[in-house]
Length: 417
Image 1 (cartoon, rainbow, N blue to C red):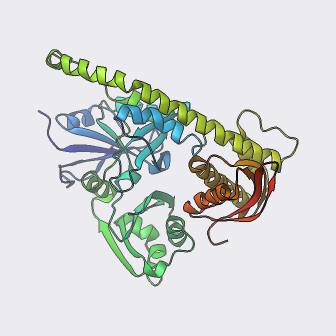
Image 2: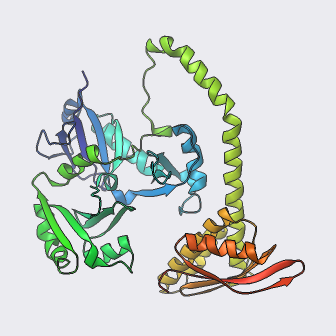
Image 3: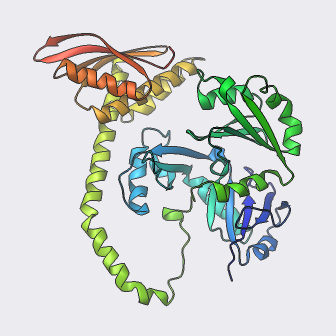
């Protein structure tokens, strides 16, 4: 008989490394001390009998996003998520696996976890080698604690897992905790107002404790909690107090036997199928809209590419062409990151105010000057307001009526520049 206990297995990055595991109850308390196993001799299979099994994978292999998606069941959200994130991921969406979480009741945004399909296959193959069938796959970053009004920092091996109640989890190297805080909160954040809570095992604290303690005089408060149960003990609490996304969705959802219960529910299923047919046309329309919006953003990036690298066509994938050209600028990684963030802000503004047409753009470190054409000056100002709504500084610096349209220049700057 199945219980509410969990068997947690922490999968290392190397396929030959030992797997650490522990059994926890429904409240996240350890029922056994963490142990390791790499033999695959069936020992973990015995431990999994009658328990739910969860694989914990590195947060570095799972990207976290918050996106606006229309209301609908999980299957529909999984269809729409790749189109909503197409311009925010660096790989072909066909090579990626998407999983959705519970919609935020306040913002209305849907959390989406993205992992490479090859990684999913490797994790499940490792489970097969250990003779277990997982019920869930969770990113460790999704299990990091969240405390209202605090920043939490989990020292995980040689990495820091940071989180607060206003941003998605962030995973950074453990050698510079101060930089990690600035990356999470922004360079303009006042560290003196930060209440920091640090979670670590005794072993990890010996390695990185001195670097973290150096923050004590820079933050409002610093509290350290050392766990004798290690990282598994800490992540077990996240099963209860967080809302982690189970990556076993879509194609990777566990297959279950139909059983005799299907006969009792076949009429309910038929009615549900009829309802799905009714709003199927609406789903197709949403997919069409997202495809059209994606094509328009690609066209905007192509125009910017043409204005920066004149006479050189970007090819079928303008965004990737732009990334490669910027990456080829020797030692100028900051410039690449700045432009991509500015382009992302322009794409987001175009979703809200799609009328202005981009004619040319000039990029300088920290700013992007765009020449746009719109029906009137008010439309151009609305576009600037949409840019400012994303947290950037934007203003119309010149404009005039030309050929029945209003042509003007809009200057976009990142915050603080």
